[in-house]
Image (cartoon, rainbow, N blue to C red; front, side):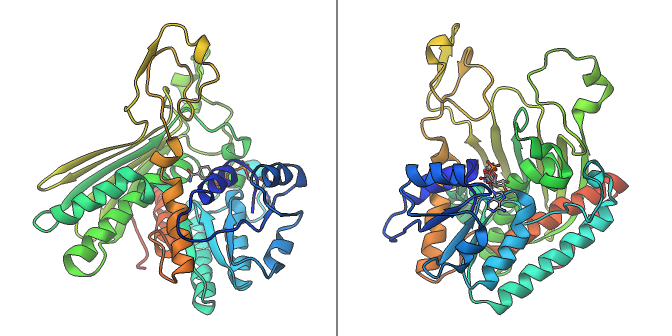
Length: 389
Ligand SMILES: NC(=O)c1ccc[n+]([C@@H]2O[C@H](COP(=O)([O-])OP(=O)(O)OC[C@H]3O[C@@H](n4cnc5c(N)ncnc54)[C@H](O)[C@@H]3O)[C@@H](O)[C@H]2O)c1
Protein backbone atom coordinates (compact mmCIF):
# COMPACT_ATOMS: atom_id res chain seq x y z
CA UNK A 1 0.00 0.00 0.00
CA UNK A 2 1.36 3.35 -1.07
CA UNK A 3 3.16 4.34 -4.23
CA UNK A 4 5.60 7.00 -3.06
CA UNK A 5 9.22 7.15 -1.89
CA UNK A 6 9.19 4.26 0.62
CA UNK A 7 7.15 2.02 -1.71
CA UNK A 8 9.85 2.45 -4.39
CA UNK A 9 12.76 1.34 -2.21
CA UNK A 10 10.70 -1.50 -0.71
CA UNK A 11 9.89 -2.71 -4.24
CA UNK A 12 13.56 -2.65 -5.23
CA UNK A 13 14.32 -4.71 -2.11
CA UNK A 14 11.65 -7.34 -2.89
CA UNK A 15 13.45 -7.92 -6.19
CA UNK A 16 16.59 -8.90 -4.25
CA UNK A 17 14.96 -11.45 -1.91
CA UNK A 18 16.85 -14.75 -2.04
CA UNK A 19 15.52 -18.31 -1.62
CA UNK A 20 11.95 -17.26 -0.71
CA UNK A 21 9.64 -17.04 -3.74
CA UNK A 22 8.01 -13.59 -3.54
CA UNK A 23 5.42 -12.18 -5.90
CA UNK A 24 4.18 -8.59 -5.70
CA UNK A 25 0.49 -9.29 -6.36
CA UNK A 26 -0.99 -5.79 -6.27
CA UNK A 27 -0.39 -2.15 -5.43
CA UNK A 28 -2.79 0.47 -4.08
CA UNK A 29 -2.20 4.22 -3.85
CA UNK A 30 -4.38 7.16 -2.91
CA UNK A 31 -4.71 7.95 -6.58
CA UNK A 32 -4.23 5.57 -9.50
CA UNK A 33 -1.51 7.43 -11.44
CA UNK A 34 1.54 6.79 -9.21
CA UNK A 35 0.41 3.24 -8.46
CA UNK A 36 0.14 2.56 -12.20
CA UNK A 37 3.62 3.97 -12.82
CA UNK A 38 5.15 1.69 -10.18
CA UNK A 39 3.05 -1.26 -11.40
CA UNK A 40 4.53 -0.76 -14.87
CA UNK A 41 8.10 -0.38 -13.62
CA UNK A 42 7.96 -3.44 -11.33
CA UNK A 43 5.57 -5.65 -13.42
CA UNK A 44 2.85 -5.68 -10.74
CA UNK A 45 -0.27 -7.31 -12.24
CA UNK A 46 -3.05 -5.56 -10.26
CA UNK A 47 -3.59 -1.89 -9.36
CA UNK A 48 -6.30 -1.04 -6.83
CA UNK A 49 -7.85 2.40 -6.27
CA UNK A 50 -8.89 1.53 -2.78
CA UNK A 51 -6.88 -0.23 -0.08
CA UNK A 52 -9.99 -2.21 0.92
CA UNK A 53 -9.86 -4.12 -2.37
CA UNK A 54 -6.28 -5.08 -1.56
CA UNK A 55 -7.32 -6.35 1.88
CA UNK A 56 -10.19 -8.32 0.31
CA UNK A 57 -7.92 -10.00 -2.28
CA UNK A 58 -7.55 -13.63 -1.11
CA UNK A 59 -4.33 -14.12 -3.12
CA UNK A 60 -2.46 -11.67 -0.84
CA UNK A 61 -0.61 -12.98 2.25
CA UNK A 62 1.38 -9.89 3.31
CA UNK A 63 0.52 -6.19 3.19
CA UNK A 64 3.39 -3.70 3.25
CA UNK A 65 2.26 -0.28 4.53
CA UNK A 66 4.25 2.48 2.80
CA UNK A 67 1.66 5.12 3.57
CA UNK A 68 1.73 8.37 5.60
CA UNK A 69 2.21 8.00 9.37
CA UNK A 70 -1.38 8.82 10.34
CA UNK A 71 -2.61 5.82 8.34
CA UNK A 72 -0.27 3.29 9.97
CA UNK A 73 -2.43 2.45 12.99
CA UNK A 74 -5.83 2.11 11.23
CA UNK A 75 -4.33 0.12 8.35
CA UNK A 76 -2.32 -2.15 10.68
CA UNK A 77 -5.56 -2.94 12.54
CA UNK A 78 -7.54 -3.55 9.35
CA UNK A 79 -4.78 -5.70 7.82
CA UNK A 80 -4.38 -7.84 10.92
CA UNK A 81 -8.15 -8.28 11.21
CA UNK A 82 -8.22 -9.32 7.55
CA UNK A 83 -5.86 -12.16 8.57
CA UNK A 84 -2.85 -10.88 6.60
CA UNK A 85 0.71 -10.40 7.81
CA UNK A 86 1.66 -6.73 8.03
CA UNK A 87 4.85 -4.75 7.43
CA UNK A 88 4.63 -1.26 8.91
CA UNK A 89 6.96 1.64 8.14
CA UNK A 90 8.19 3.69 11.08
CA UNK A 91 6.72 4.99 13.33
CA UNK A 92 3.99 2.50 14.28
CA UNK A 93 1.75 5.36 15.37
CA UNK A 94 1.58 8.81 16.96
CA UNK A 95 -0.84 11.55 17.91
CA UNK A 96 -2.46 13.12 14.83
CA UNK A 97 -5.22 15.15 16.45
CA UNK A 98 -8.68 14.44 17.82
CA UNK A 99 -10.56 17.16 15.97
CA UNK A 100 -8.25 20.10 16.75
CA UNK A 101 -7.72 22.60 13.88
CA UNK A 102 -4.78 21.53 11.67
CA UNK A 103 -2.19 24.08 12.89
CA UNK A 104 -3.02 23.49 16.56
CA UNK A 105 -2.37 19.78 16.93
CA UNK A 106 1.23 20.37 18.03
CA UNK A 107 0.00 22.55 20.90
CA UNK A 108 -2.06 19.76 22.49
CA UNK A 109 -0.87 18.66 25.95
CA UNK A 110 1.83 16.04 25.50
CA UNK A 111 0.44 14.06 28.47
CA UNK A 112 -2.82 13.76 26.54
CA UNK A 113 -0.86 12.63 23.47
CA UNK A 114 1.03 10.02 25.48
CA UNK A 115 -2.21 8.63 26.94
CA UNK A 116 -3.74 8.39 23.46
CA UNK A 117 -0.76 6.60 21.91
CA UNK A 118 -0.58 4.19 24.87
CA UNK A 119 -4.25 3.29 24.31
CA UNK A 120 -3.56 2.80 20.58
CA UNK A 121 -0.56 0.57 21.27
CA UNK A 122 -2.68 -1.56 23.60
CA UNK A 123 -5.25 -1.92 20.82
CA UNK A 124 -2.59 -3.18 18.40
CA UNK A 125 -1.43 -5.73 21.00
CA UNK A 126 -5.00 -6.95 21.47
CA UNK A 127 -5.53 -7.29 17.71
CA UNK A 128 -2.26 -9.19 17.35
CA UNK A 129 -3.18 -11.53 20.21
CA UNK A 130 -6.42 -12.41 18.43
CA UNK A 131 -4.94 -13.03 14.96
CA UNK A 132 -2.10 -15.43 14.17
CA UNK A 133 -0.22 -13.10 11.82
CA UNK A 134 3.23 -11.51 11.87
CA UNK A 135 3.91 -7.85 12.59
CA UNK A 136 7.12 -6.63 10.93
CA UNK A 137 8.43 -3.21 11.96
CA UNK A 138 10.30 -1.64 9.06
CA UNK A 139 13.12 -0.04 11.09
CA UNK A 140 15.92 -0.34 8.57
CA UNK A 141 18.68 0.58 11.09
CA UNK A 142 18.20 -2.85 12.71
CA UNK A 143 19.27 -4.35 9.38
CA UNK A 144 21.96 -1.88 8.33
CA UNK A 145 25.19 -3.88 7.78
CA UNK A 146 27.08 -1.62 10.22
CA UNK A 147 24.60 -2.43 13.01
CA UNK A 148 24.59 -6.16 12.16
CA UNK A 149 28.39 -6.25 12.37
CA UNK A 150 28.27 -4.33 15.65
CA UNK A 151 25.82 -6.93 16.97
CA UNK A 152 28.24 -9.75 16.19
CA UNK A 153 31.02 -7.90 18.02
CA UNK A 154 28.81 -6.91 20.98
CA UNK A 155 27.75 -10.55 21.27
CA UNK A 156 31.34 -11.38 22.22
CA UNK A 157 32.24 -8.22 24.18
CA UNK A 158 29.30 -8.41 26.63
CA UNK A 159 30.53 -11.78 27.93
CA UNK A 160 32.91 -9.73 30.11
CA UNK A 161 31.72 -6.14 29.56
CA UNK A 162 28.63 -3.92 29.36
CA UNK A 163 27.31 -1.29 26.97
CA UNK A 164 27.52 1.81 29.16
CA UNK A 165 26.40 4.44 26.65
CA UNK A 166 24.98 4.58 23.14
CA UNK A 167 24.95 7.84 21.15
CA UNK A 168 22.94 7.79 17.94
CA UNK A 169 21.93 10.46 15.46
CA UNK A 170 20.01 10.84 12.23
CA UNK A 171 20.07 14.35 10.86
CA UNK A 172 19.89 16.24 7.58
CA UNK A 173 18.90 19.63 6.22
CA UNK A 174 15.14 19.01 6.44
CA UNK A 175 12.40 17.01 4.79
CA UNK A 176 10.98 18.39 1.59
CA UNK A 177 7.58 16.82 2.22
CA UNK A 178 5.07 19.51 3.23
CA UNK A 179 3.31 16.91 5.40
CA UNK A 180 6.35 16.53 7.63
CA UNK A 181 6.02 20.19 8.67
CA UNK A 182 2.71 19.66 10.38
CA UNK A 183 2.02 17.61 13.54
CA UNK A 184 -1.41 16.71 12.17
CA UNK A 185 0.21 14.56 9.45
CA UNK A 186 3.66 13.69 10.81
CA UNK A 187 2.73 12.97 14.45
CA UNK A 188 5.68 15.03 15.70
CA UNK A 189 8.88 16.60 14.44
CA UNK A 190 12.54 15.63 14.25
CA UNK A 191 12.31 13.25 17.22
CA UNK A 192 9.49 11.16 15.71
CA UNK A 193 10.68 11.40 12.10
CA UNK A 194 14.49 11.14 12.45
CA UNK A 195 15.25 10.27 16.09
CA UNK A 196 13.04 7.16 15.82
CA UNK A 197 15.84 5.42 13.84
CA UNK A 198 18.69 5.65 16.40
CA UNK A 199 16.19 5.13 19.26
CA UNK A 200 15.03 1.90 17.60
CA UNK A 201 18.58 0.66 17.09
CA UNK A 202 19.67 1.66 20.62
CA UNK A 203 16.73 -0.15 22.26
CA UNK A 204 17.38 -3.18 20.05
CA UNK A 205 21.05 -3.39 21.09
CA UNK A 206 20.34 -3.10 24.83
CA UNK A 207 17.52 -5.68 24.48
CA UNK A 208 19.99 -8.02 22.79
CA UNK A 209 22.64 -7.43 25.47
CA UNK A 210 20.16 -8.34 28.23
CA UNK A 211 19.09 -11.55 26.52
CA UNK A 212 22.70 -12.51 25.98
CA UNK A 213 23.78 -11.83 29.57
CA UNK A 214 20.80 -12.88 31.68
CA UNK A 215 18.14 -14.27 29.35
CA UNK A 216 15.89 -11.20 29.72
CA UNK A 217 15.94 -7.87 27.86
CA UNK A 218 17.41 -4.65 29.23
CA UNK A 219 14.54 -2.18 28.77
CA UNK A 220 14.16 1.62 28.59
CA UNK A 221 12.66 2.86 31.87
CA UNK A 222 12.91 6.67 31.84
CA UNK A 223 13.46 9.53 29.37
CA UNK A 224 14.61 13.14 29.55
CA UNK A 225 14.37 15.25 26.40
CA UNK A 226 14.79 18.68 24.84
CA UNK A 227 13.51 20.02 21.52
CA UNK A 228 12.99 23.23 19.57
CA UNK A 229 12.22 24.53 16.09
CA UNK A 230 15.60 26.13 15.42
CA UNK A 231 14.20 28.04 12.43
CA UNK A 232 11.96 29.97 14.83
CA UNK A 233 14.76 31.12 17.14
CA UNK A 234 16.00 34.75 17.25
CA UNK A 235 19.30 33.45 15.80
CA UNK A 236 17.63 32.17 12.65
CA UNK A 237 15.48 35.27 12.08
CA UNK A 238 18.53 37.29 11.01
CA UNK A 239 19.81 34.59 8.66
CA UNK A 240 19.70 35.03 4.88
CA UNK A 241 19.76 32.39 2.11
CA UNK A 242 20.12 29.32 4.29
CA UNK A 243 19.82 26.03 2.38
CA UNK A 244 18.03 24.56 5.43
CA UNK A 245 14.35 23.72 4.93
CA UNK A 246 12.04 26.30 6.49
CA UNK A 247 8.28 26.75 6.82
CA UNK A 248 7.83 24.28 9.68
CA UNK A 249 4.41 24.69 11.29
CA UNK A 250 4.00 23.20 14.76
CA UNK A 251 6.83 20.64 15.00
CA UNK A 252 10.36 20.69 16.42
CA UNK A 253 13.33 20.58 14.02
CA UNK A 254 15.92 19.65 16.65
CA UNK A 255 15.47 17.07 19.39
CA UNK A 256 17.57 15.08 21.79
CA UNK A 257 16.42 12.41 24.21
CA UNK A 258 18.36 10.69 26.99
CA UNK A 259 17.06 7.20 27.74
CA UNK A 260 17.81 5.47 31.05
CA UNK A 261 17.87 1.69 30.72
CA UNK A 262 16.88 -0.84 33.38
CA UNK A 263 20.58 -1.59 34.07
CA UNK A 264 21.28 2.11 34.79
CA UNK A 265 23.09 2.78 31.49
CA UNK A 266 22.21 5.61 29.08
CA UNK A 267 21.34 6.19 25.46
CA UNK A 268 21.47 9.67 23.90
CA UNK A 269 19.59 9.97 20.63
CA UNK A 270 19.35 12.96 18.28
CA UNK A 271 17.19 13.83 15.31
CA UNK A 272 17.69 17.21 13.63
CA UNK A 273 16.89 19.18 10.49
CA UNK A 274 19.81 21.62 10.85
CA UNK A 275 22.64 19.57 9.32
CA UNK A 276 24.19 20.57 6.00
CA UNK A 277 26.33 18.28 3.85
CA UNK A 278 23.93 15.35 3.30
CA UNK A 279 22.17 12.94 5.63
CA UNK A 280 24.21 11.59 8.55
CA UNK A 281 23.21 8.42 10.38
CA UNK A 282 25.77 7.54 13.02
CA UNK A 283 26.12 5.53 16.20
CA UNK A 284 28.83 5.52 18.87
CA UNK A 285 28.59 2.54 21.23
CA UNK A 286 30.76 2.82 24.34
CA UNK A 287 31.26 -0.43 26.22
CA UNK A 288 33.26 -1.01 29.40
CA UNK A 289 35.80 -2.99 27.34
CA UNK A 290 35.44 -1.74 23.74
CA UNK A 291 34.08 1.00 21.51
CA UNK A 292 32.20 0.87 18.19
CA UNK A 293 31.81 3.87 15.86
CA UNK A 294 29.29 3.27 13.08
CA UNK A 295 28.79 5.33 9.93
CA UNK A 296 25.54 4.03 8.49
CA UNK A 297 25.38 7.00 6.17
CA UNK A 298 27.50 8.36 4.59
CA UNK A 299 30.15 5.71 4.06
CA UNK A 300 33.61 6.82 2.95
CA UNK A 301 34.67 4.00 0.64
CA UNK A 302 34.52 6.40 -2.31
CA UNK A 303 35.90 9.92 -1.88
CA UNK A 304 35.51 12.60 -4.50
CA UNK A 305 36.83 16.13 -4.84
CA UNK A 306 35.92 18.76 -7.38
CA UNK A 307 35.87 22.51 -7.77
CA UNK A 308 33.22 22.36 -10.49
CA UNK A 309 30.39 19.85 -9.83
CA UNK A 310 28.65 20.52 -13.18
CA UNK A 311 29.87 17.32 -14.95
CA UNK A 312 28.44 15.09 -12.17
CA UNK A 313 25.14 16.93 -11.82
CA UNK A 314 23.11 13.82 -12.74
CA UNK A 315 25.17 11.30 -10.73
CA UNK A 316 23.45 10.23 -7.47
CA UNK A 317 25.74 10.70 -4.45
CA UNK A 318 23.83 10.72 -1.14
CA UNK A 319 20.43 11.60 0.30
CA UNK A 320 19.98 15.34 0.88
CA UNK A 321 23.47 16.38 -0.28
CA UNK A 322 23.20 20.06 -1.23
CA UNK A 323 26.33 20.40 -3.36
CA UNK A 324 28.97 18.15 -4.93
CA UNK A 325 31.65 20.85 -4.81
CA UNK A 326 34.63 20.23 -2.52
CA UNK A 327 35.11 16.79 -0.91
CA UNK A 328 32.19 14.38 -0.85
CA UNK A 329 31.56 10.67 -0.29
CA UNK A 330 29.36 9.21 -3.05
CA UNK A 331 27.62 6.08 -1.78
CA UNK A 332 28.02 3.13 -4.19
CA UNK A 333 24.85 1.43 -2.83
CA UNK A 334 22.98 3.60 -0.36
CA UNK A 335 20.00 1.23 -0.02
CA UNK A 336 22.35 -1.62 0.95
CA UNK A 337 24.18 0.44 3.58
CA UNK A 338 20.84 1.60 4.98
CA UNK A 339 19.71 -2.03 5.36
CA UNK A 340 16.60 -1.98 3.14
CA UNK A 341 17.21 -5.28 1.25
CA UNK A 342 18.23 -7.09 4.47
CA UNK A 343 15.05 -5.86 6.16
CA UNK A 344 12.74 -7.18 3.44
CA UNK A 345 14.68 -10.47 3.29
CA UNK A 346 14.11 -10.97 7.05
CA UNK A 347 10.40 -10.18 6.77
CA UNK A 348 9.89 -12.60 3.90
CA UNK A 349 11.75 -15.33 5.78
CA UNK A 350 9.76 -14.62 8.96
CA UNK A 351 6.50 -15.12 7.06
CA UNK A 352 7.59 -18.08 4.92
CA UNK A 353 9.39 -19.94 7.72
CA UNK A 354 6.95 -18.94 10.46
CA UNK A 355 9.46 -17.31 12.81
CA UNK A 356 9.47 -13.85 14.44
CA UNK A 357 11.12 -11.02 12.50
CA UNK A 358 14.20 -9.44 14.05
CA UNK A 359 12.34 -6.12 14.18
CA UNK A 360 8.81 -6.69 15.48
CA UNK A 361 5.91 -5.32 17.49
CA UNK A 362 7.58 -4.86 20.89
CA UNK A 363 10.33 -2.69 19.40
CA UNK A 364 7.79 -0.67 17.39
CA UNK A 365 5.75 -0.01 20.53
CA UNK A 366 8.75 0.92 22.68
CA UNK A 367 9.98 3.47 20.12
CA UNK A 368 6.58 5.24 20.12
CA UNK A 369 6.53 5.18 23.94
CA UNK A 370 10.05 6.70 24.15
CA UNK A 371 9.25 9.39 21.54
CA UNK A 372 6.01 10.49 23.21
CA UNK A 373 7.43 10.31 26.74
CA UNK A 374 10.20 12.47 25.23
CA UNK A 375 7.59 15.02 24.13
CA UNK A 376 6.13 15.09 27.66
CA UNK A 377 9.65 15.64 29.03
CA UNK A 378 10.28 18.53 26.60
CA UNK A 379 7.05 20.22 27.63
CA UNK A 380 7.26 19.63 31.39
CA UNK A 381 11.05 19.86 31.79
CA UNK A 382 11.25 16.67 33.84
CA UNK A 383 12.20 13.01 33.52
CA UNK A 384 9.30 10.79 32.44
CA UNK A 385 8.89 7.20 33.58
CA UNK A 386 7.94 4.73 30.83
CA UNK A 387 5.10 2.27 31.21
CA UNK A 388 6.25 -1.32 31.83
CA UNK A 389 5.95 -3.52 28.72
N1 LIG B 1 12.69 3.76 6.83
C1 LIG B 1 13.00 4.86 6.19
O1 LIG B 1 14.16 5.20 6.04
C2 LIG B 1 11.90 5.69 5.59
C3 LIG B 1 12.21 6.61 4.58
C4 LIG B 1 11.15 7.33 4.02
C5 LIG B 1 9.85 7.14 4.46
N2 LIG B 1 9.60 6.26 5.44
C6 LIG B 1 8.21 6.05 5.94
O2 LIG B 1 7.41 5.57 4.87
C7 LIG B 1 6.09 6.07 4.97
C8 LIG B 1 5.68 6.70 3.64
O3 LIG B 1 6.56 7.78 3.38
P1 LIG B 1 6.91 8.23 1.88
O4 LIG B 1 8.12 9.08 1.99
O5 LIG B 1 6.89 7.06 0.97
O6 LIG B 1 5.64 9.16 1.56
P2 LIG B 1 5.07 9.51 0.12
O7 LIG B 1 4.22 10.71 0.31
O8 LIG B 1 6.18 9.54 -0.89
O9 LIG B 1 4.13 8.25 -0.25
C9 LIG B 1 2.97 7.95 0.49
C10 LIG B 1 2.06 7.10 -0.38
O10 LIG B 1 0.89 6.74 0.37
C11 LIG B 1 -0.20 6.75 -0.51
N3 LIG B 1 -1.46 6.86 0.22
C12 LIG B 1 -1.92 7.93 0.92
N4 LIG B 1 -3.15 7.66 1.40
C13 LIG B 1 -3.45 6.38 1.00
C14 LIG B 1 -4.57 5.53 1.17
N5 LIG B 1 -5.63 5.93 1.86
N6 LIG B 1 -4.54 4.28 0.60
C15 LIG B 1 -3.47 3.88 -0.09
N7 LIG B 1 -2.38 4.65 -0.31
C16 LIG B 1 -2.38 5.88 0.24
C17 LIG B 1 0.04 7.94 -1.41
O11 LIG B 1 -0.69 7.80 -2.61
C18 LIG B 1 1.56 7.84 -1.63
O12 LIG B 1 1.80 7.03 -2.75
C19 LIG B 1 6.09 7.06 6.14
O13 LIG B 1 5.54 6.43 7.26
C20 LIG B 1 7.56 7.34 6.40
O14 LIG B 1 7.83 7.56 7.79
C21 LIG B 1 10.60 5.52 5.99
